[in-house]
Image (cartoon, rainbow, N blue to C red; front, side):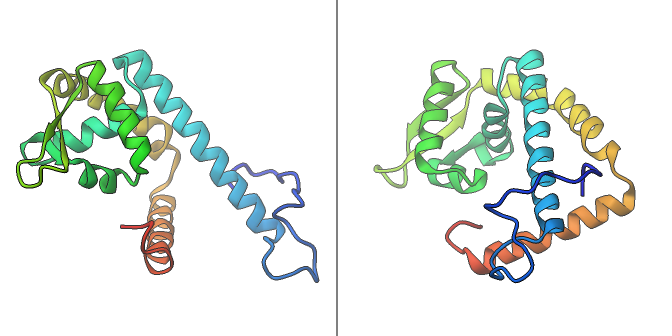
Amino acid sequence: MFSGRAAPRAAIYAGRVGDSGNRLDEREYQVWRAFHRMHDKLALALNQHLQQDAGISESDFQVLAALAEAPRHALRARELREELQWEKSRLAHQIRRMEQRGLVARDDCPEDGRAATVRITDVGLSTVRGAAQAHAARVRELFFDALTPAQLDAFDEAGAAVLERLRQRCPAEAP
């Protein structure tokens, strides 16, 4: 349990002895809720920090970082969507907002006229480079510095196990 305290029971998830095997037991429920609390609070803190320091959101940063690391600083929209694990509509709205701010540009794909290529602009590249060091320091402070090496190894192992399960059971949703 991340929080070290019992989470309130929620009838929708937690079951009692004798309930269907589809319900979470008390420990599973506490860990699941703690995972969500950790994720949500971490995402909020990182997003606020990026907004204050660089004037961009965590979503902006994810797009810019993916494009900055890509060959020729560009990806087909489909490749970017797969890299970020986003839905098509979410990416389209995000790219439109970022285009309006001059962070990215959308071009016709030379190999396929029906497809679009998204590329980072000079402004976007400067923005992500300026934000990256402070963002990495904040990630270290809030996440990595809170974990012992053994906890980090366990977290890595648990994450890999869940990602493998997703790959096996949900091939359309996982890379």
